Each structure stands twice: as C-alpha cells, then as structure tokens.
Image (cartoon, rainbow, N blue to C red):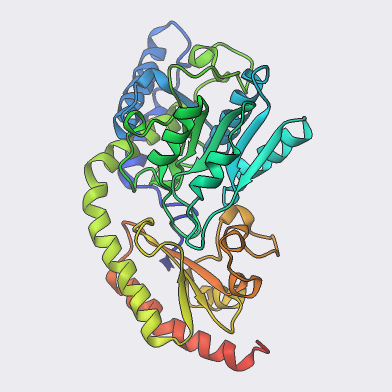
Amino acid sequence: MIYLDYNATTPLDGRVLDKMMPYLRDYYGNPSAIYKIAKKPKEAIAWACDNIAELISSSPAELIFTSGGTESNNTALFGVAFSHKDKGKHIIISKIEHSAILEPAKFLEELGFKVTYIDVDNYGVIELNRLRDSICEDTVLVSVMYANNEVGTVQPIKEISDICRQHGVYFHVDAVAAVGKLDINVKELGIDLLSISAHKFYGPKGVGVLYVGEAVALSSFIRGGHQQDGRRAGTENVAGIVGLGQAAKIALEESARDSKRIVGLRDKLEEGIKKKISDVKVNGHPLKRLYNTCNIYINHVESESVLMNLDLEEICASAGSACATGNTNPSHVLLAMGISSVAARGSIRFSLGKFTKDQDIDRVLDVLPGIVKKLRQMSPL
C-alpha cells in the first residue's frame, strides 16, 4: 500500500510506540496518587512537557494536555469566550478554518456571541486589512490556523499577531497541521494559545496539547478533578502523553532533515502530474505552503472517482479534510479561495511524509494518468 494522506493522520513511529509501552504495561499507577508506582508516570508527564515546550519554545507550565486537536480548539474558543464575556462577545476566525473551529464558533453564535468570518485570497492567505477592520471594542479573540490542512497554505502569523497586540485581543492558532513540519516559537510569534495533535506528526491518536500563555485567563472546559492544576480535569493519558513527548523529541531532531527529502518528492509528484496529465492546476500558495502538501485540480473528472480508482491500486489520497468525509458538499476551503464548485469537486490532496519513498511517487505517476484518461472518456464533464 502507498500511503499519501499524511495530513489526515500519520503512521505511528516505532520509537514512539517503544517509549509508550512501559506506561501501558508496567507503570500503570495514577500520576495523581502519592505512592511509589505513581512516581514514574508523574515523571514521564514532566519529561513529555519539557520536550513539547522545547518544540514550540514555551514553558512546560503553559501546556494543557487534551484528547487531541479538536478538544484543544474547543477549549481555546470556549475558554476565552466565557472567561472574557464581560469585556465583549465578539470573536474573529477565517473562512478556511477546520471544522473543530467552525463548529464551536457556530455554537457560540447560538449562545449570543458574534462571529466574524474573514475572507482569504486566491491562495488561501487571510486578508489582513479585513482582519484589522473587523476588530472592535467587543472583540476578545482571533483564531487563525497556522497552515491549512487541505492546501498547505501558511498564514502570516506574526503579522496577524501584531494586529491582535495593537488592539489588546487574544490570538489563538490552530497549529495541528503545522507542528512537526514548521519551526514554531510561540513567544517570538506572539501567540497566546496554540493547538497541537500528536497523531499529525507520528504520535498516537487521542492526545494533544493546548499551549496557553501565562497571561491568558481561560475558563476550564472540562471540569471534575484537580488534575493539571485544575485547568483540565480527568486522569492523564500517561502513555499517550509520553508518545506525544517522544514524537516532539524526534521532530526536534529530524524534521529539518526530513523536510528536504519530502519537498523533493512533492515537487517530483507535481511536475510529473503536470507533465503527464493535461488541464491541471495546483491549489494553494506556490511557495508559502507546507512542504509535504500537494492539492491539485484535475479538470473533467470528479475527485471521488479518482480516489476510488487509486484505492483499487492500493494508493491512499484524499479530497481534503478527513473530518469532512461523508459530506457531499465541495470543500469550504477551496470555495473560500474563489475556486468554482466544479473545480473543488475535481481537486485531490496528496500529502507526503517521512515514510514516503521515491518509488511511491513513481507508482502514482504511472497509474494516475491512465485513471484520469479512463474517467474523462466516461465523464459527461
């Protein structure tokens, strides 16, 4: 099988699993307990905190462990909104955010909050003047993803942060697609809150982190016990947290090396598709995008048919966010970029990773042109 859907999830690195196993099998004590077998899990959580903090240049005390990116995003939006509702009930997000931001924002609207959805340009980059003009006295939070999971476009985070700073507004960044691929320094970038999910960079599913700057007042989202200094109740997922910490350690040591190889494979894939298949166009910013992501429009076919035929050849790709699977509507990201509904339905995302091989790309370039030719001959488009 050739797996080219790393933006949906990544395979678990064997070294991550090895690091997790003792905490699934041997060191099972509850880290909140006071007896000896609780000491190892407690120390392991602190070790993971140190690695993750180093990855994003934060303090370990500023990290809250969650069940993943969705919970981190929900906690950021609801935590800031509810904690600062006396100041104002207005938040700003972009139109290309993940559903883990869009759906909480819609729920806040039902609760009486006002949400402004900022436009992006044809590359998927947020329009800074629109953002600046949308901030008002009631604005308490701006939330913009670091890099888009569908097209890979990277946002001007520092410029957005500067605007938020000028107006005294908190800035949350959904960095689920970016962490482990891009260098992130939350202090230098001026980020107040940042969401991470382990399974996007070779860690386990079901665990994530929300970075919360020490100056940020945040209402607790999950209530119960006093774990994590009362900021997020529930017994910690020790094995998952250890896996996240190990994935962060590996990313620190190897991501720069991996990126050089992967971007070469991505460019080979794109150039090969453009050479072998007529009437195609790459979606997203040509330069300012994730090095592993290729979202490409193939005219006169529908992406679903292409993906089904690729699957028959044991090649895994996608039409966009895995969280939108089953939704028959075209991608909201591509539509927000001004791409037509027809083009959005004909767009495919290939996302590569550190286990992608040169021969994998050769195989796709060997198979895909024939699939497209067959479907074009059959298609009324």
